[in-house]
Structures are given as structure tokens and as C-alpha cells.
Length: 390
Image (cartoon, rainbow, N blue to C red; front, side, top):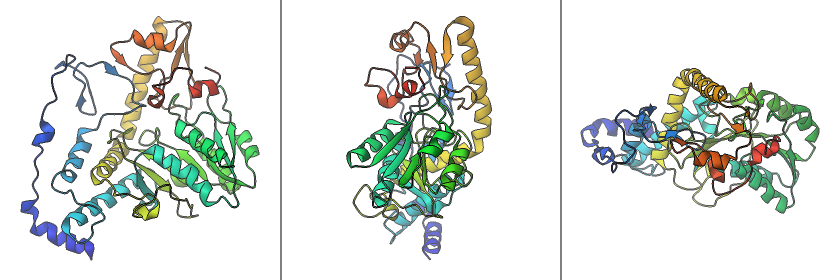
């Protein structure tokens, strides 16, 4: 009924719904780096600024994504939870369309997608939410030593509450040992949480095999797929994933929005980590930010269409960069597996040179010694320590 009302109202008011993008088109102040011959990424002109090689930290918003978002900042600004008028209907329809776009990219049902503020929140809901819900029977969590900090900190928080956590080591290639994983699972294990693509060294874990072990032993599997979404094929059914954390700004979408996949059959339950109006089926309260959600949905749709082309292009770029470095320098080591890795990540060590000193000399290149969330810390990467490279 609501859909018919919306369609009728849209037809009758189409002449009133124009919007202006003049404000969005205002040019930023001139930069000393501006260069009309600069390169571009996904249509975003870099204009001669330092070469950006920090895509694991964030990506620019694709102009096509921004175009999709703008109407929901301007004329279609309604609250998606206000379902008694046109503005709310428009916004609600846009949110549900975005939910379907995200779900399609991972072969899930739209009903299994919960929008959040980002992968960090999704990880917190997954790790703490599951264990709190099943706390009477399940008191044990398994993860790896090379997880994202928000997963590791969530596990440490659970330990402070009396839960038991096993931190599995990884091999020198960054891959978890499947036999060790199987041996670590106990009758009271409530969750296995293993990152799909490592945020620091780009290693891809064998999620199909991990999923089979968890299914066989009847343990829910959570994976942080923030660095995998839109970059490698993901099938939650094939991987037997119960929960999956996703992020928008890693795939040319906006910052401040993410999603959590929650399997419905067999159903996985979580205890909400935030109190409020009960939005997103009571799992994540708070008004859903329609423009951001629309942007993430558009980014997922574009990623689905362009993933194959991007993979081939990025593989060639990585090969060219690595060959260029190794041809001129000795003592260069690629950290982690060279076979099971996402090509958009090239994590390398240089003999006899500290990473901090090296980066201080690379004024024309924007890269990082470690992943963005550790930028205020000095010391070895948690991940490199885990594989023996720290």
C-alpha cells in the first residue's frame, strides 16, 4: 500500500522535486599542489598532489556515488522512519534499495543487512553482542593475533568480563593454521572471529575452509570483511558466515556508514550494544542516515559491476610497482603470503631502514608505515609481530 501511495505521489509532484547542486560544485581553495595534468582515481582528479597509496585507510568518493547521494541531502531529506508522508516514503524506499544493493554484493538477503556507522561498530556488535546474548552457555571466543584493533579490544573487554579468549597465531605467510583452529574449538565456544582480508598485509584467509570447520562443529563464524568487500568475490552461503562486518569508505563510498550481515537461517542472535528507538530491527538504534546509506549502496552496485576489471588493472599496477622497487633495491621483502593476497595491498619491508625514516623521505608519495588507526602510535605492526616480521 505504501509503495502505491509513494508512486502516485511521486508522479503528481515530479515538477516540484528539482534540486540544486550548485553548492556541491563550488571549487575548494587553490592548492599549491594543483596541476591540470594530474592523475585521477575513479573520476576523482588528484591534480598533481602527492601520489596516494593509502587506499587501505580510505578511498575517495566516486563522483557517481556522490551524484546518487546529493538528492537525499537536498530535496529528499526525509527521515526514513517517518512513514506517514512523501518525504519519509522516499527516504525509506532509498534505504531499502541500498540494503538490497549491499546484500547482492555478498549473496545475502536484504533482510540480513543491518546498517551501522562502520565496520568498527559492526565488529563490536558481532563480538560482544553474540557473547553477551549466549553468555549462559557460551563463554569462549576464538580469534587471531592479527585481527583489527577493534576486534582485539572487544575480545579483551570480554576477558575483563570473565570470558575466555583464544588468540590463534598465524604462520609466516599470515595464514591461520586450520588444524590449530579445529583443535581450539570447545563445547563452550560461542564465536570464531577471523578477518577475511588483513588490513595491514592484505593476506586473504581461507574462509571457505574456515566456514566448513565452524559449520561442522556448530560454531558461529564472524568475519571482518571491511577490506574484502567489493575487492574479492564474497558469498556468505559458500563461506558459511554467520556475521560479516562491512564498511562503505573502503570502496569509494562515504565515510561514517557500514553494515552488518546477520544470518537468518540458522538464525544468529546478538545483544544490542546501543539503546534507543529500536531502528534496524532493534539491533542498531538511531536514525538511519539516508544519504550515507544510499552512497554505500551505490558503491556496492558499482563494485559488483567493475570488480573484475579493477582486479586485472590493480594486479598489473602492483606487479609494476613491486618489479620497479626490487629492480633498484636489494633487501626488499614482501610481508605475508605472495599467493593468497589482495593485489591492492603491497606491504614490504626494507633491510637496514626504519619505516618511519623511509616515509619522511617520500614527500611525493602518500603511504603509511602502518594502517591508519595506528597512526598515533610508534612501534611495530601488531600484524607484522604476529608473522614474525616486527
